[in-house]
Image (cartoon, rainbow, N blue to C red; front, side, top):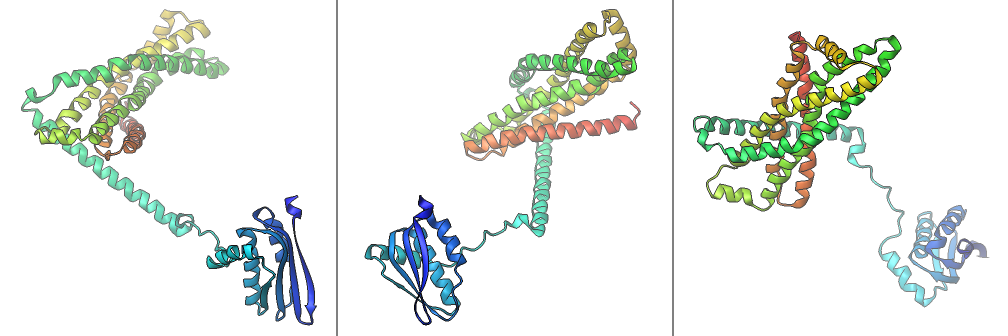
Amino acid sequence: MASAAASIAVTEDAPGSLVVQARGRWLVATAEQIDHTLRGLDLPQGKKVTFDLAGVDRLDTAGAWLVLRTEHALIERGNNVAIRNLRPNFGPVLEQVRAHGVVEPAPHPIPPHHTFVGFLAHIGEITIGIGRRFYAILGFVGVVAVTIGELLPHPRRLRVVATLVQMEQTGVNALPIVGLLSFLIGIVMAYQGADQLRRFGAEIYTVNLLGISILRELGVLLTAIIIAGRSGSAFTAQIGTMQVNEEIDALRTLGLDPVQVLVVPRLLALVVTLPLLSVYADLMGLLGGCVMSLATLGLTLPQFLSQLQGAVGEWTFWVGIIKAPVFGATIALIGCFEGFNVSRSAESVGKLTTLSVVESIFLVIVSDAAFSIIFSLLHI
């Protein structure tokens, strides 16, 4: 076995002189056993110690390092150390290891951010980075606002065809996925609501829960999240690819404003289509909830509609619709902003596309929370 192929014996050669006899194969495979044995040696200080390597059959850099490390430790203790009977073919290995040093390796340094001060510094760097990114986004929003303001006196400069194309891609093409997910969410909400309210004999109020939650929050929020992952990422990827291919520079060379050509049509498209998609999501969510309610609660369609009409107030529907243009503008601006930030590499396109989706969803939820506070203060 490899672990038994190396041994160490200590004998006394003469009064005040010890011999450490090494035998076997001093290789990396036996290094652990040899190291354990060497550390267990209790050699007296001040005596002469001789390493006799006549019995060493094989030696690699690990074995040579153990020999030289022990020699170094004994010299520091005041022993007179010598090495004898080293085979000629082992000499280069020993010298090579000696040339690179034989001191015990230093412990792995603690990364700066693993210390308390480093942790605080890391938090500070993140905070400053977030502040700078917010400032950059705010500046981009200002540039877009100025561009739109310049277009208002000259509506013919608005790229209507490009806007309609973006409306088709972000709105019409998103109908299947938005409708399917909204329908399924309606089913889940109705099922879970009925299951909880059944304990209190109030299953009929599942319709109230369904109508208020979908019309006020879930319909528009779910639609915005889907569009952020679907269209917001597409905006970043499209503009980012143009940035990599230097097409943005080509637009500027031709005297065209990239914000006017690329951002404004996408912004207007989402501001218009997201409210329409939200209405569609509301209807599909209510339809899913209606199907589940008729199946599990035994309600009839007139009963469902009557209960829904009683639960939904005059502002319930408009609360969700008012949020939609703001969510659409947020998604479009973040997607285009990250697209313009892409450097000239494919890796940057993928990284910022992912970042665009995360930032869009985060800001949509923050905006939704802000709307909730405002509506609560207004008693809506």
